[in-house]
Image (cartoon, rainbow, N blue to C red; front, side):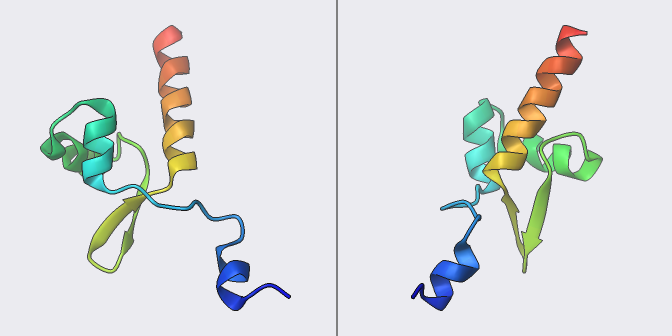
Length: 72
């Protein structure tokens, strides 16, 4: 039988990304990531207490959307 932790984590990524991860991934300053969040123009993030986290699947979807917009 699966443990409670395994059941709760089913379907969730192994690790959510931090603002530092997003800045490094896109090669932009951390300040830019926070600006994107404030303006709601970057990848969607969510709060866990005081901390902002990003779902890697949502980040990939945002990148695909940006690619489509740029190609249009």
